[in-house]
Image 1 (cartoon, rainbow, N blue to C red):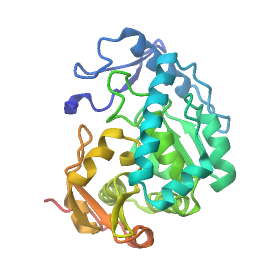
Image 2: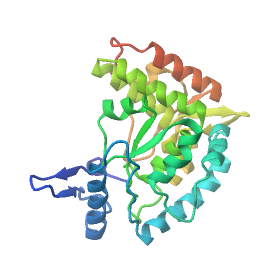
Image 3: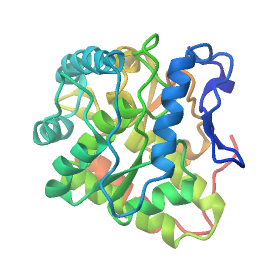
Image 4: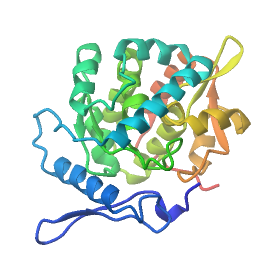
Length: 291
């Protein structure tokens, strides 16, 4: 999979205004100069974005469209087998194209009339408070690049497949949209960084990697799982535990490879109730508990 040092590729803007993306040696794009330059152009476009305007269109390459076609077709089949009912219904509403990468503005045009959420471009990883806080405005900050074509079935970086297939589908659902907005309002009222870190950890094991029981079967509802072909083949081999805030707060998570421990709600209603109860009760005295 990936070494930890390759997880996120930072965006650098030098004193002359030149934008570059720094790839660690283990990243599949480390020696791919055209991919690096393309990523830098996408990042620069995001840095120039004017709030309130539609997200800028990206000139995606044919190789990138092919990656999207390959992955989205495989994911569609795996979703029919493993995705929870709420996700499948939301997927019908957003009705993503499989033949080419969508523009982020197109995603907003589909999601906005359904739940009021819009997507705005992010050059790379966004600071916790900024990312979560924007959800209170029903705004999702999303990257616009796509994973390297040599490794299409998994990406530790939040690329367009993750943002659009995972979170874009979530945000076509009123039930999920309400949870995202509540998450944003919760982070905005918290002053303690420790409390925000706990919220982020619970977000990881619910919104990103959560499972639910449905008809006696374990189904997937997390955006990260649902946007990774590889994870959808592996998740039933993970150690599956019941939803529990304390356990989630102690459990370390991995970005560079598949999760060894996942958490499962008893139903989607339980998923909603658990997350709503946590987000309305968490306060500045809350914090991660060391394992």
